[in-house]
Length: 100
Length: 56
Image 1 (cartoon, helix red, strand yellow):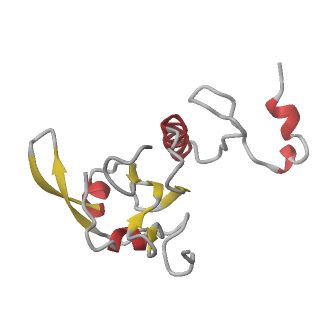
Image 2 (cartoon, chains in turn green, yellow):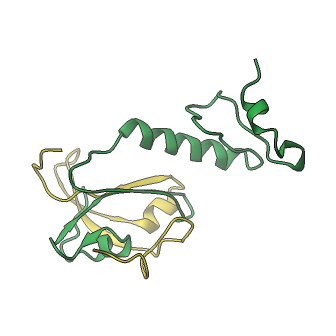
């Protein structure tokens, strides 16, 4: 558990609320190279979905290893269908994600 | 409330920062820096919360 008594880190990530002196419920997924891949910020009264955060971490790890793929809408876990973006896929994403 | 002007956003590289930590597994204080995460080549989740003992 980290401490941010001056709010410097919270301000750096844009979650410091000057009106209250508190941090909003922000979650940031950072790659091993230090790049932010995902950000989610909720107001005080809405708790996060840990399931969703884990889903995004797993998606990021998968995509880092499969640079030519993309995770479509509602991708949940490794093994689920992914897309290989290309000119051939234009206009055909629905078919590609709804094959039987 | 807050503008999105000068802070980080998705796609930015985070500058190295460090925070003092409490590590329950060791029962003592420590330090976390972004640099240490990069050295270990791990993905990280930074989880901000407003205060202890809120009702959420």
